[in-house]
Length: 62
Image (tube, rainbow, N blue to C red; front, side, top):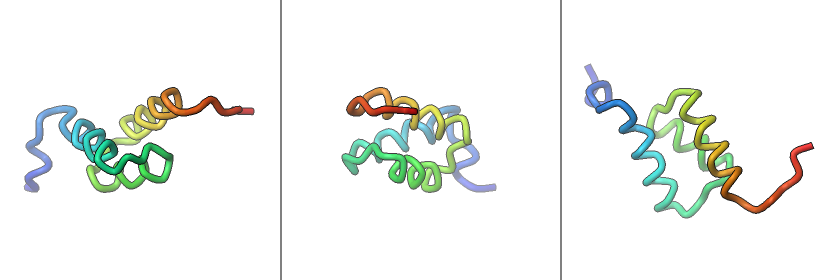
């Protein structure tokens, strides 16, 4: 049993957000790296992508 399997619910996401803040990168590549590093679920990764997309500069999504 790995140590990560006993983390409280949502702890991996919190760690990923902290790591992204330390990296000062919030682009899709950084979110993908955080998802791998912290073993995020696809839903958690999508949450981060949507959050940072809404926080970033306005861009066209056509």
